Image (cartoon, rainbow, N blue to C red; front, side):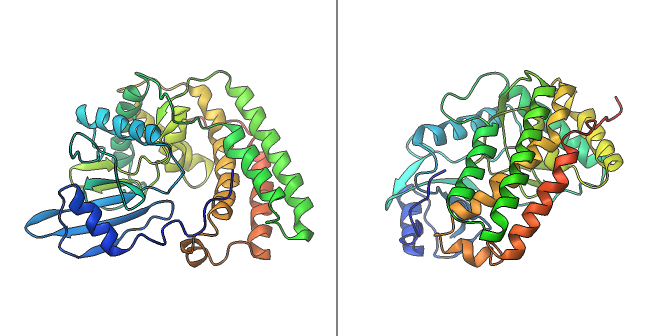
Length: 330
């Protein structure tokens, strides 16, 4: 993980956003609404007598053009199969465009609300579409997008934090030790799972990226799409005590298995993937700290209390990594 350029969006003014839309034939009327996104910059643009669009400006240097093109192609595959994934709009035969030093894509606006994940029918409905997404994802491989693995989501983030001087001096040794123990547990979990299949996955399926309408769910923000185990797109939908998570998972899988097989060995990875996300998330904020949006959004980051909480969080994860995996009823 390398440090990014400071203030990468400093020149992305409202005029640049509107001119970029003009360049692809999507003429805004001047009304822009910044949407909740930190990694990229995303705006809803209103248009005279035309439906609003959502325009996403990709963070410079994060993905290559080829990697973004694979994201777009994956979404297009899903849309062609009538899976409710919001695909980028084409202009001039392209979905990825450049303007003012930025790369961007535009999408039709699709509203919705957070899914009610405490409802069995909602979980099963989401599971059916995840099964269809994974059936498509298993049909071919990504050529350029990376894999979700221990090195990129665990080892490198840990090294970035420890070698970058982010930890307070009196907590550095504790964080170093507990993160090392946690990663050892992650490796044991992956060893127990064995050689599970890696497929193209959404990568970040949580309640904020599944928008619900009366017609059911639709899936947005494939920015983290990569190669990984199928369970990566399931575990973030689970919450509560073990019995609650087993019940939720059973409902998701009841819908999922109608369209795609699920290898139960992957259940060994649930807590391992959660642990990797915790390590990666802290490093992600640190890596983006020179972007002015991050100190404003995460004012509690890098405080003494923040790192104490991260150490406690990892300590609590360590025993979970060796527990018997979730066992939803068949």
